Length: 362
Image 1 (cartoon, rainbow, N blue to C red):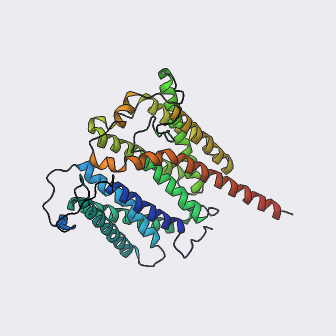
Image 2 (cartoon, rainbow, N blue to C red; image 1 turned 60 degrees about the vertical axis):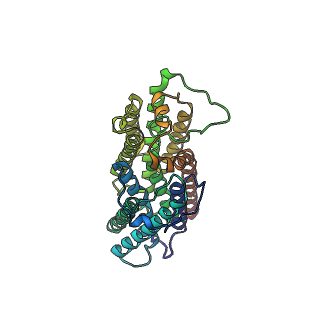
Image 3 (tube, one colour; image 1 turned 120 degrees about the vertical axis):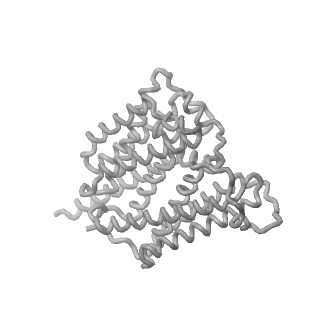
């Protein structure tokens, strides 16, 4: 029987809301230097003409960036008994208010131009995220067997957050497909692999990340859930984020530049390895996830710098991208640490559970 969630809003959801608001403020107001007064109203942009120059990718980015905010607000309102529609509308209103505030503050920064189009896209993104969150909540109620009974709400929320964060950081160029934990300007240059081994290294690193994600999905959901389909959806979302990020940074012609021979091999290796290892016991799966996680991080760091990575990592003219570049770099660096801590926490919980069962056995 699934554990019933607490009647109080999850502390983790509250922390997520504060953290995401801080991230939005950082990205919207970066570099936060050169503040100066303005003569007119800070909300005059709401009545100004539509911007003459804009791109579809910038518009899509403004929608996507505010979608998580809408979902988080809906999660926070889950016990308020407002109903799905009212909760979604309230979440969209919160997103709209946050967008107006940040767009207004951009008036005081040189090089930043507030836009009514950005505000509308942000509001639409918050509404989209809220609707997706309410749809997911309904799906959970219809399929309680998808929820693992032994998983505490905190661990479940944190695990889902890790998966969502992993998908988002794929939009930032990494040394290998699904790479993470790449040290940024390390004090000591790590030994790099010979370029001759680049294809094999990337395949193993990408395959390891594939296995890690598959094992995390299996720890979050019981056998009754469509875990294979859920894993496929997470991987597909990550590849979509990778493609959109590449297209945004360097144009549509390089949208699939990440699909190297090593990346293709990694997808195949990961799928086969996951199929072979998925039937292992829970604690064994978590240990496999930890080993695969560490292997991917190690291979990411020793992978030789290639032309693709140098090109994608060079300064971009995509203005909206610059706002979140630092955040994505930091998230990619620390994600494996958070995933490792979560996996170890789950191992300890399973160990304690097994010990409790043995203690009760006569």
